[in-house]
Amino acid sequence: MDAVADVAGGPGFERLLPTLRDGARRVIAGAVAGPVVTFDPRRLYPHNLSLIGSSTHTRAHFASWADLARTGTVRPRIAGGHRLTELHAAQEEFRRGTHVGKITVTP
Image (cartoon, rainbow, N blue to C red):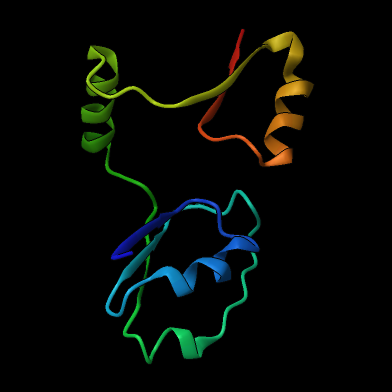
């Protein structure tokens, strides 16, 4: 891969490094799978990989993305939905880590 956007971190961090091509970039914008990562630095410098931290986006970017979602131009992948009274089930689904997409909670 030429670029990876990583919002997970955690134990999967190191497993993805070999999938990056020489000169690739990895943007880290979260740590939902865990804040501590390990990796062999010999995978980083000999392959000229770039690790970039991102605090997400500007307010203008967010407004633009929200407009895309409102118009239906971009539709996020929804893995599951729960009512607020089922919050515990939503948290358990998230904790299992087998979902792909967002888990929504509706009040």
